[in-house]
Length: 361
Ligand code: IPM
Ligand code: MN
Image (cartoon, rainbow, N blue to C red):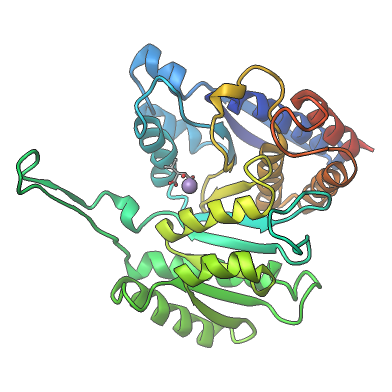
């Protein structure tokens, strides 16, 4: 029997609560589809930091590397200065494990209310591939003459051809496998580059050249589009049905996926994967640690369950992943009154139980 070693990091706030439900569904899927999960819990997060002053111990990365994947709840603690945990833990793991892809599907599930009038699951059904290792996130820059009237701050977007190429390769392959034609819901598979070639004439010039060179040479079957990032925000609201697979740099990807998450029903459902196709990937709900809902058993665990579903898919357990997807869709279509915390009509635990039961049936 195939065994997967999964590191579980519940993290802060409601993170542990939603992670428990994701693990519940994962165990149900493993039993049903004949694989084993060996879990290791890690207590990284705000509480540990407050106790020990340690965010991500050096040994942690070596340990995490021994796993097949990581399931993360949420990072962020009200008593810890913003940036410490986010940079040290979340970005720390992304960089140390070279998770250079951030895959964020934007899909409206049946029964979920969409804030955009007239749009439904057929219109909001695309994926954003956010480059996850470069850009303005690399820490290049600094403060000069700090505290003086002449103070200067710089923070530079950094991209190498290597980083751009490996991301594009993943994006083209993803479009070929999961594009609208591949899924039988459209006539072609399309990859669109999202950039700002009219202003960022160095960084997105590199992206654009690499995009067309690779597409022409290796992926002639995939249609190529280009959108400026500002226009992308407009089309995400006005005509999301145009999109299939989008690929973009780290910062633009960060920003447009929050907009995307809102159009798919909010943080209660949005999930993402920090993927190293050759290494250890980490899956997480996109929403934060929601301190005010902590410990009340009212937070929506579906985003964490969807993150776990992406993990199964990435591990190669396609059948189990499809079953979890089906179960989540059934629950949103027929059970939940709302996706919002406290308004679901069910507790956190009950939602996890329902999905697990449907996976088992
Ligand atoms: C995200 C978050 C992080 C990011 C923060 C918390 C560092 O916003 O995962 O989108 O900017 O990548
Ligand atoms: Mn973000």
